[in-house]
Length: 231
Image (cartoon, rainbow, N blue to C red; front, side):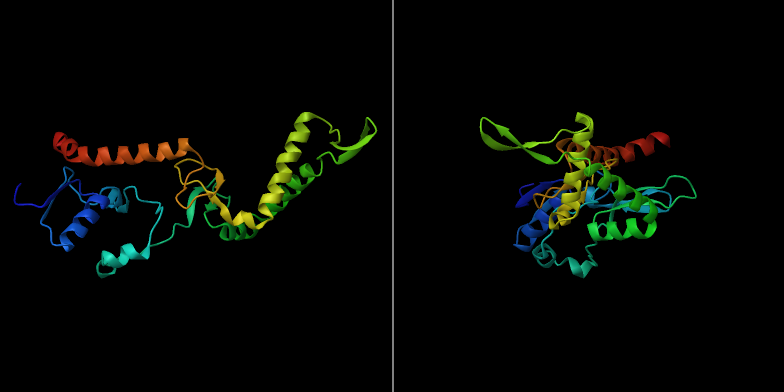
């Protein structure tokens, strides 16, 4: 081991990048990996017969052109592709699938072109509920005019009207461009992207993603043993 300047444990994408940078700087590097494949969560594997897919790197949080240039990735056919969708719901065979696009403009086109009548009905519902928000009223208290909220039909109706009003304000303003679909498996929620690295609607969803990645990694490590047992 003294023949090496650096020993890296794990041949995932982080380990391989570290080894690349050290080797290009003149260091003699040894990379150790216990799994039977390289790349970690960035590896492409045949998950099912005839179906190859990324093991876990399905969301690029931050990517800088500097990474592509320093690692000379284009020499090896590297191409960065944006993920168009988060989830898809198929429903009945005769139904048009409902696709959750990550780009809000593409999502809007999908709603209008493929689900036009349903979208129109949903917009009518939101607008009608928002119209039920009690109008502000002036009241006289102790000789002074004060602005207060009018009385609604019920607390529930007022609450729903407030939510609808906020939805109208959000979707109709420039802030709507920051709306993103949550990348977590099984999540159907959207959130406001308030930080460049935020990809999940909640801490719980982020934890689910990390747990799924850990499971895939552990499954990949144990695959050779299970295959030998089957044999």
